[in-house]
Each structure stands twice: as structure tokens, then as C-alpha cells.
Length: 221
Image 1 (cartoon, rainbow, N blue to C red):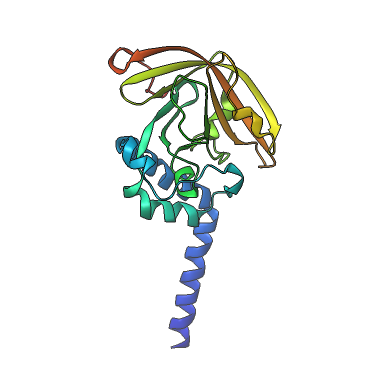
Image 2 (cartoon, rainbow, N blue to C red):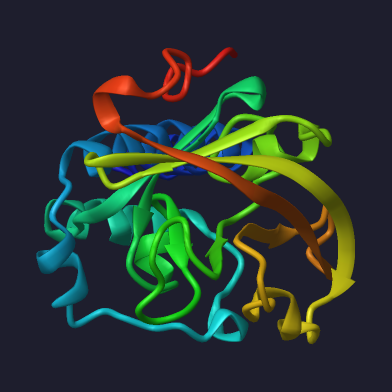
């Protein structure tokens, strides 16, 4: 009896140890699957009627495996309002309404109410998981001149990256509208989470979805 108990405890500890060692890989795998599913679940009206809507980025916590598993349980109820792509760094994510913990475990969250693609300063937040592939992590490879694309599946809006910089977490003015400027501002954490990495692009053009650049939503990993 004691031997069986010891074996059971040992097995549990082994499983927990493996989970801890491969924590980031497990999270990345689950998040990638949720991201792909959310992109296909486009429903702008449904997304904006969600009860889980929050625009306070300061309330966002570091992403844990528990957060990812919780988001996975609610994933079927998460609907996107569009898609964002930066093909040159292999980023393609659903745009989700608000920055709830569930949304940011799946894709890019809108940081202000009533934003419209191609107008004002369209600001999106996302997690940096420091693995170069998941959520906003690929933005650490972004360079000036790269193209960024957003779409609501009717039109595709093209932006060119003009600024890449680091700010303090308290500098929220970066997402405010700028007079006579149409911007796409992406906000994520720097490598240790103490500050914010900002990728900002200027608006170039809008095309019908079926006439957009062929590589707009084909990532080059």
C-alpha cells in the first residue's frame, strides 16, 4: 500500500515537474490553437456585446498557464472584430474587442472604444511571451519600413512602420489620436515587463479585401 502511494506521489511530482519545465511551450501551443480559431470566429456585433469588455490596460496581468487554460474554456464565446498581420515577422492575430485577460490570452485587444480601422490612432495591445512566435512576441523583430495590415474582411488597411520605441508603462498618451494623422499603434511589454514596447505605423491605403496585397495575411515565418 505504501509503495503504491509512493509511486502515485512520484508520478504526480513527475507530471508537475514536466509541466513546469515545458510551461512556456504548453502555453504557446494552446494560445496558437486559440488564435487560429478566433480568427475564424469573426462577428463584430457579437464581440462588442460581450460581457467581458475592459479597456484598462493597467489591469492586465502577466499571462499564466491558468489564464491560458481559462481562456481555452471560453474560447468558443470569443469573437473577433478583424485580423492584424505583420507578415515580415510572422505575426497574424485576431483583433478582439477590449483588453480582458481572456482576449489577451488569444490575440490583440482594442485599447479604446469605438475605434475604426484606417482612422485616428487605432491602438492594439498584446502580450509579449518572449518566444518570438506567440501573440505580440514577434514584434521584437519589427523594423522600420515593414508593412502592417488590418482587416474587417471587407477592406484591408495598410500601414508602414515609422517608429519603434520604449516608454514607461504610465505613458498612455501614445494611444491618443493625433491631429491629421492616421496611425496603427501596437503596445506590448518589453523583455522584462517593466516598460512598454511601441510599434507605430502610418496609414498608407485601403483596398477591398479581395484586392489586397497577396502576402497581407500570409506570414513569412
